[in-house]
Length: 252
Ligand SMILES: NC(=O)c1ccc[n+]([C@@H]2O[C@H](COP(=O)([O-])OP(=O)(O)OC[C@H]3O[C@@H](n4cnc5c(N)ncnc54)[C@H](O)[C@@H]3O)[C@@H](O)[C@H]2O)c1
Image (cartoon, rainbow, N blue to C red; front, side):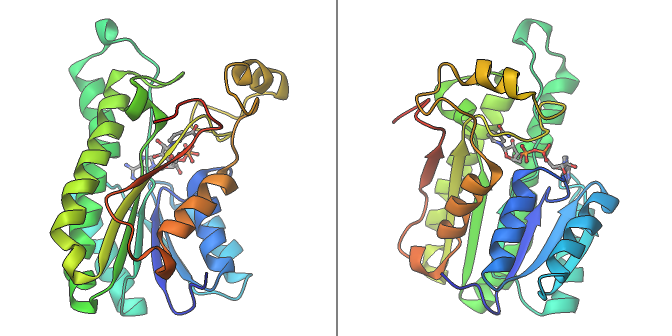
């Protein structure tokens, strides 16, 4: 797989131990220029520096994926600098461990906004460019929570958002397939990142792994490998599909 001359946007890639960073570095290693979008500009800049050290083009852009204006500005900035957008990875996401009985309307709106609306806004924003190019790859971060109904840490709003991403991806995949654009998703299980408020101790990770057939949490790099495949030229005939990366904790 080569990503030479490919321009990639990864949202939510500013987290130092996150899945987005692993995706950004994996694609850069294989030749891509990478735009690191994140709410946190300092975090995004650090990842962009790591990519520049690999002698690839990189740019950090502060973006709130829930705001159309931010997303439009992100795409304009990328086109000014690189002139094209080949791959969008909708990775920005947040979770909240809460039961429906305790969930407020605001909780629901916030989780749906970042995970689902953000995926819609960013996908919409790159489409006209990808259609003009006759080429594009969109890869979304869903979750095992969206497929089996609840994960260990996400509430029902997170499950709804991540299931919504799968439906959105399939419908969009049909719309744009004739333009050489594929739309796919990955559904990770428990991955060792800071999304749950900090990296768990090894002891805690062991406890959390008991019910996982592979007996461990996944790594961001293992998610990145699947994303890279779906974003590659080699995956041109795969669209509307999703790949589980969960150590066997859910099989369908
Ligand atoms: N870690 C897991 O176990 C796991 C499992 C399944 C799915 N996922 C999904 O993978 C993706 C990455 O998760 P992670 O574990 O790397 O999380 P993380 O918390 O390490 O990183 C998420 C990043 O998204 C950014 N972000 C949050 N809100 C944003 C917004 N409105 N606009 C732009 N950026 C925003 C944060 O600043 C952060 O840098 C998420 O979509 C998550 O739901 C994670």
